Length: 101
Image 1 (cartoon, helix red, strand yellow):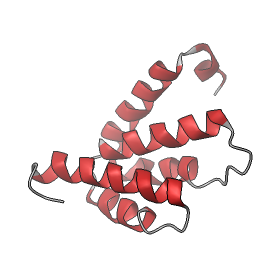
Image 2 (tube, rainbow, N blue to C red):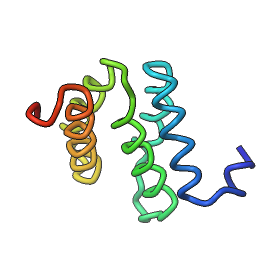
Image 3 (spheres, helix red, strand yellow):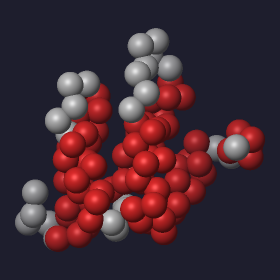
């Protein structure tokens, strides 16, 4: 939406995190769609959106989030794989406590 162009990156990220936390499994497809585009030219905006989507996934309470992040953590694309593993660790710590990885 056009309104996000008026918001700072930090504000956009906070809205996305809140959207994920409140939306549960209903927002997983949207967040996955933000993560999976190929970024051959190293577009900074796409990198930031992907990072924001992973941060939002870490705050999502749906059990399906673990399945999505587990799948993404096996991606052939190193950047996605690394971010997914970090988000999965954060998600599991939130859900199960610090001892579960």
